[in-house]
Amino acid sequence: MINISKLYCGLAGESDDLRYNAENSSGPVVAFNCTNLCNLNCLHCYSSSTADRSSDQLSTAEAKQLLHQLVEVNCPVVLFTGGEPLLRDDLFELLAEAKQLALRTAISSNGTLIDLAAARKLAEVGVNYVGISIDGDQSFHDKFRQSTGCFKAALAGVENCQKAGLKTGLRFTITRQNAGKILAAFDIAASANIRRICFYHLIKAGRAKQIADSKNKLNAARYTLNAIETRQAVDTIIEKTKEFVQKKLVDEVLTVGNHADGPYLLLKMTGEKNQRYEEAKQLLLTNGGNKIGEKITSVGWNGNVYPDQFWWNYSLGNVKNKTFKEIWSNPAEPVLDKLRKKSEFADKRCLTCKWFDLCKGNFRFLADKTDYENWLNEPACYLTDEEIGI
Picture 1 (tube, rainbow, N blue to C red):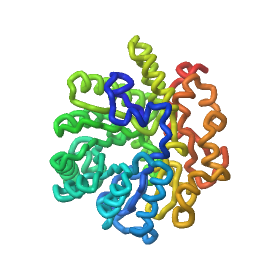
Picture 2: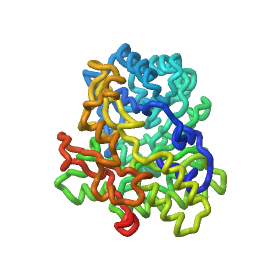
Picture 3: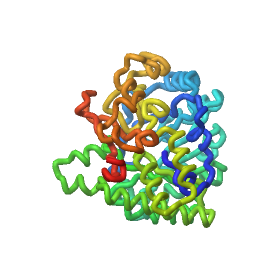
Picture 4: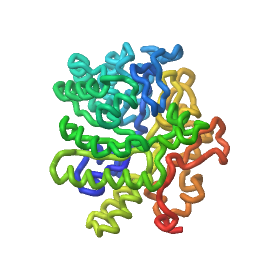
């Protein structure tokens, strides 16, 4: 995550100690995709969630065992996501177990099922944060998620969380179709008193990959931004963040998924002679860029462990067969080994980049095989050769 409000504007964030502390010895942040069930059918869903429950979903006992194993590796926070996590029947039981273990929890939801009773239950079981996805204004959001009324239901979910005293944020995934809705996302956040906004770069996983790989190139191009469009989107986020910080309308604005945002922000600060440049650069260096396979991982509803929540084509192992610690600490795991040696194993262009130490690229593979020729920068770097020092 690139904390725009912190780096560009100097606004302290709640997760600064976790993100910018060189002495941080915590284990990985874990996204637990606790169910594949979903009541919506979003066009860009990375998990390809459906209305039918997977037959191999972890049982309540297995999921509780997983939570105990995450404590064992000093996991700082587990994000319950899906599908739609509120469709998992034992969700509150699992969250209560996490609370008993003093395991910090967060929820990623479409918001439509969070009535006031559910919000109060989430608060009672100690959920620290609820992120609710909004894709743009009402007409776009409902169309993109293929469900009339889901925008109003999502905002009702936000309001119910706030009434229950839950910290709530807005999650916005940037596609070519809704890049022009970024300003609307800020306005929605302001009108709903949402003080944390996360902008996610689209990663071609799940249905998003199916769209991107479509033989219909026109259809594929509707979803993925090119380099110029990405820069424009990030510029909009940066400028609007500055305005919102000055007006005290926001606590945190972050971008997620493309670590090129860090050097791009520094380049912008250089051009503006921003006095915060050196501090921002040092914070990014301390953070160390891409942490996939090091400080970030994901566990699917069937127990498979993945390098991150947008990388489901390769499993590191399954917690039904081995403990999470055994999987995460396996020295013979070839993909983990490469991910933990990013300074040696990275895209050739990245290795020549002057910003590499604070970015580390977005190197992953979306195919079934781990061969080097299948690895690529996904999402793509949008910096020019001149900007990276070639």
